Length: 143
Image (tube, rainbow, N blue to C red; front, side):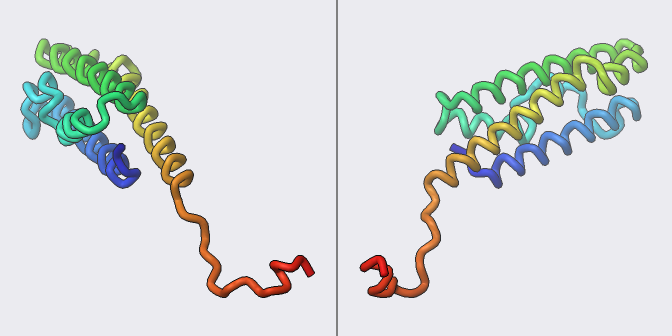
């Protein structure tokens, strides 16, 4: 199971990738190779999910995130097709509130939910606060 820190980094990687991709669409691909949109395993989040699949493939949060990650890259590929076909307005509409935006939001929410699951699991296994002084004999006797 990943740590909360790893999930936070995964969220950050997704946000960075999205920002670069969205800027590339509006700038005409100057800073982004559009072929990367179709190869989801080439992003930092994709690499991380591949690593998690080796150690925690049966985790429900992992399977949910992995599925939504695939959906996100399908939506990304559609944005690439629209933009490459000269339909920048439609591509930007998808980025703003269409399938791409919805897929990205669903992925982000699933990552957040996974992080909350990890936090809850961590708190169940955490050692409680240890006393700093031994108990007094009166406490043991109930007086």
